[in-house]
Image 1: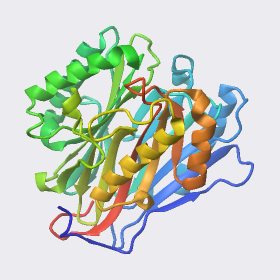
Image 2 (image 1 turned 60 degrees about the horizontal axis):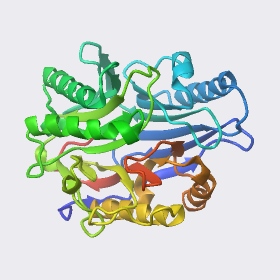
Image 3 (image 1 turned 45 degrees about the vertical axis):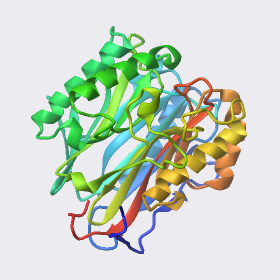
Image 4 (image 1 turned 135 degrees about the vertical axis):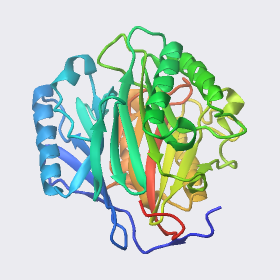
Length: 392
């Protein structure tokens, strides 16, 4: 399905920017097209040394954020996600997001013993802004408008009703901007308070809304992560982030399956795609949904064995990336979710050894099935040369 595209010499460049003993570890992945066009920077900022107060850690990471923005002043921030250890006491202290930058705030404690971490995406040569009525940030580079929304939530509703309302409101907002959830939404995230109890409601609510929008096993779903995560308001059962692209053609979107390794999610009653590849004239986006240690029959593999679950999870993701013509060398960032903090030391050592400069964070976030000890999502960018489509 990708054989008509030729790759270019451009490679994703991953590096650790911080110096020894810096209070913040800054990892960055850079993508710049071979010809003139939009460049991208993906940063992960993590506190280097645990043990200090939240105020101190916030000051350190805010200084690193400001330095990053100043050092890359020709770039515009379009997406940021704060990972907090105690959102109810911390969220109100965060700095305001830059204009036009979607800001997600989720309680998923960084598992290196610190209280805060930050994922940040910057782009060059785009017009950015915020539509307050639709609650959507936009970044425009004709003919595409990239639409991001973050931390949508409705307190005092159960997870099923809240999920339905969030998706229906989001679909209305997209429609008001000339887009729709079926053709244009390519990625969602659902952060679920007490995931072992509330995830079933998220699944039911999503299935109901998707059926109404003709998102079915016979058409397609949307790449997604559904994972444990808290809101600052404890009365929120579920919060949602989403990414859509208007101006995209249906033939530019391919859903990744990796059937040798994974089954279709509808076989066990849920409605999301394992991953999505989006082709532009100069690059391919690959957005890999939350992926765990599962086989192509839908079974949990290597129960209670974190080491072997890491291996199977990465093998599954590798199969999805390969289906889209990419490898781990093309990955811009990783988010790793652990159910049990006691597994952090082993997982961190594995990722340090294999992906030393990869922008990544490991957070405490139970996966939607208790048997899964670990889950990971990632995004990759592959340089391609496809004159049929406009560049990113």
